[in-house]
Length: 301
Image (cartoon, rainbow, N blue to C red; front, side):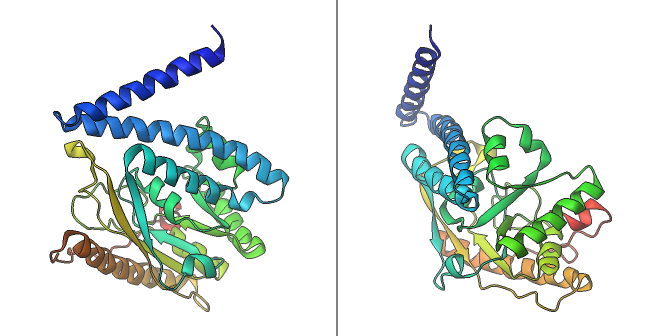
């Protein structure tokens, strides 16, 4: 049996399983979770393959800086078709189009934030990622070819070198980066933020570029893994005004991190209130909401 025959049977069987689960969801709601999860994984694989090919072509053409943007947009449309989930970008001042370079920072709720990036990711921007992701088939290949900045958290010297390389990329090529300062997914049912690591803010100060906060409303009504909830829906994501870093020094990073987190938490609560159409109290923060550590954890997110 040829490779194409095996691939055809696999895709056909995969599609049939997803359709069957969607049909079963009318009787068994948990089947919708399985259906959308499977649909999301195959959508991610398809877009990773497309992204790797697009990155090769764009690198040859000298346009690799838009590889992640074009792949993200493909993922947006495929996920909208296969899962019915999308993010509505609120950017009234068009910061995504006009602010470059910058360090974009956003809250990190679940794996669905990959789709959020696909919907809002600006041109000439790249993500940062753990070095271990570089080894993943398809996704790792795409990230490598498209200029992702990989950070080795196990090696302080290499990690700091990766940050220095990111700062040079920002300055020389007007290349923005997108980072999640929480450092991990919160999986929160209510709007809240984990303590922020300072890497993104050190990077912005080092490169002398603004911080652009991006806030996503809590979307546990769409995806809440603990209760096997995965529904279709439109989730708002708001781009806030840039925060300048001109003239700031490393000594200012703690305050920059704290004030940005406070701003993002308030905006996240307000955005979630609009989605739920009811008031929500701003959650209390333990300490100042900033990770204070030495070594890699203090400088990288």
